[in-house]
Figure 1 (tube, protein in one colour):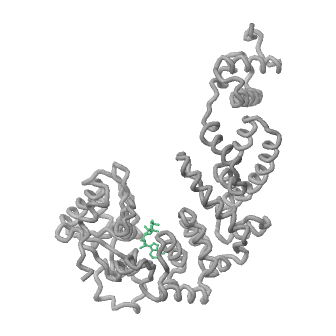
Figure 2 (cartoon, rainbow, N blue to C red):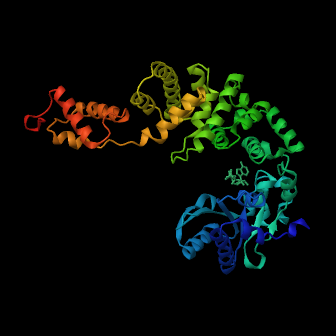
Figure 3 (cartoon, rainbow, N blue to C red):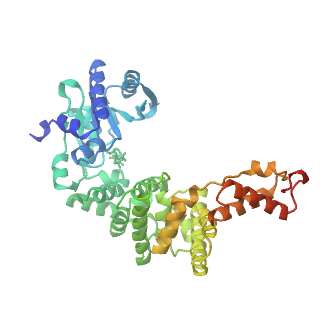
Length: 443
Ligand code: ATP
């Protein structure tokens, strides 16, 4: 009965018109080339949950790459094909991304689990997925447009707010699904189903995690760090003893947990500034998880996660820089130092460092200084440049940097706020240094 549900109206009402039209058009094109097309996965899940998501995933029974080319040709866009996986990505001219996959039977690697022969290829495709809530499809061909394909009781699970695997070997087949289960549960405030919870514990007992590659773990961790409830995910990971299974030195001490909570607050605060620059959240979270650990332990965890040399050294550098900034900031405030000094202090830190600094030291005073830096100081441009210095007859060299820095300090401290004042100051500084050419001498 539930399988017969049609969600056409829901699609129309919950999706932007443009996206809805893409679905209609994709269905017509599929019919024209004699294939069946479905919208699948997280896209459908999020429509039913009414949390729209524009990552469109299609599965076709037929040739996915050929279908992607048809889409791109008809709607205007580019195609990138991955022949090995028989998948393609279409990027339409408006920027919309459409992932197209090919449903096929032979892909399934565990023939013992189901009577394979009886399955349609879309069913096979859905059966390979992680959770019931991600294993929904909607038919797009005009004859059945909007018809929901729910082989595994996903609608019931969404209604009951449960994350449930499709079969009992799921976590053994792919242990990263444990991290995914936690991520989806926390994101939607679902619980992990009873049997699914037992299967997770069972997979933990079987020591599946230590065999996982660092890159795969880090990939899933990264996705967790992008979540609003990242800290809850980490706690749940600890409760499943997943953190220590990844690396014995990964624990969550109360101090680290406090710091993680501060990070969450700082992220909310930063979001409300509506700035364009997005932080690399994984760096901030790892810094918190590494708090209080000796350097060699940190490196050992980084190695386990297969971070690049560059990523590991960036983390260590950031950690040192933040420590220094906490110290320097305290001194600056104690002395009542000038704004320019704040600027030069914060300028040293990449955004992740700034946000971690604030998490370490989340006080009204710091929030005020940081928001002044991020929203005002950082964007202030000098009204003079190296070219003006050259025009004064100053020899190009390291002195340029020094003078420009002094001009910037003066500007930030309100002492040379227009071009004329800055030029005058530049001349004075240059003259002091006796680097200036004769004919450009002022007065
Ligand atoms: P998000 O909203 O986080 O993007 P999503 O469901 O789109 O969620 P993706 O990681 O983009 O998540 O994966 C797309 C789809 O591929 C999922 O809906 C899921 O069905 C399937 N999938 C992804 N990873 C796995 C996995 N490890 N095992 C099985 N299926 C997976």
